[in-house]
Image: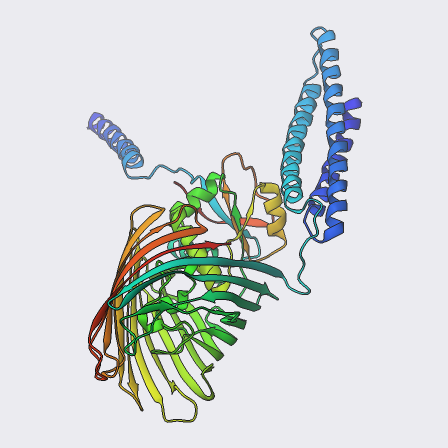
Length: 160
Length: 436
């Protein structure tokens, strides 16, 4: 009887271990971080689900809206065309090709005078610019970035 | 000891460069040039310091090797820290040099344009040229008939106040017909002018509530709102919008007060509700007000946007000529397909009721080529008969700011009660629009 009890406790332990192991392997999504992020001023209190945040950022970037919810005027800093963060942002968040974007800005310029956002090359200069404006936002590639300065925070992340 | 003295120097250099980076923002004329010179001097000093530090580190390394076997872990770590800081400083100097070069390329030794008082001032515009040939049943004519230069200026006074002005300089000879029925014998008659089609000031209380005062494009439909040749597939707008600055169905431009706004709707805010309401005068009737508006809805990422339009007003000063207008517009813009459709009808007090509609599907062959077709119908009543147009065109954008078009139009004039028979005319046009 004792032998049986020892055996059954071994079996239980093994079964439990296998269950946990298999669950972790098959049912838990492997955690990997996205390659790019949209950053905002640390004073920006806007928060919503991921889909809503992407739509909000898209509207502000395209000048279809000019204010964050709450009334703070948005200030958009794009990145240079050679920066992969910018091209992936256009593809994944704006969901627009280069020609669609050009058509959009042509229409905006001709009907309201709105122009594309200013492009910034250097990360360090971008951080300085963003520190001046609580409504500012921009795009960063996370590779080789290091810790963010205390004046900005990540709003959401995205990948190719 | 040497290393410990070098670290404060390095920190001092970093702080100096930070101050330089701050000062690298472009502001005004002469100050920009002297700031550029200061930046360049400081960059030279920083590079000299880096070379000096590099030399010191090399000397330290040689010293280290000479001390056989007796390596200090702390010294190695300090060297690594200094090397990292030098590397970071080099990267920041590269970034600053890029900014200085960019600014120097744009400004150089030239004077900088300044606004008296504005947060920003943007200037743009376009140049439109057309060559048209018209082949009617009673004759033919061809001409380089249109040259329009339009300057667009936007001043952002504050976050909430802005001004937008479009000043045109036109040399135009739209195709006309010299026969009594205006349908057989095409001709081009030159008219030159400098109209100001748009000049408004806008106050933004929020994205959902703006007040616009001045002269603006009547916010009806699709093509009238877009109206600038740089973004239209065809420089000849649909028939109900001709003549330019006229009021065939509704006045194309009006002067008055407009309230407008947009609000995100739906799941995630991907849809959008927009509205415009106005009270204004048409330039042809300064005594009587027109009232009108549009409600539009963009259906998420489906590509569809629909609008409902309405207005009331009086066409001519001093004589009974009230009208009521209702209309609907539908836009599909997604992927390769761009399809615009509009329909408007009026109830006229003192003339025949009017009906106009068109549908214009377009296919984006690739990023540079677009093909389109338009069926266009206009009925101004039995006096003049109705008119139908079939327009086919090809558009080529070699670069985003240049548009070259070729169009062919078949226009049919219906028989008119004044005794004018039906007639056909063909028009061929090549046009270019360069925008900046």
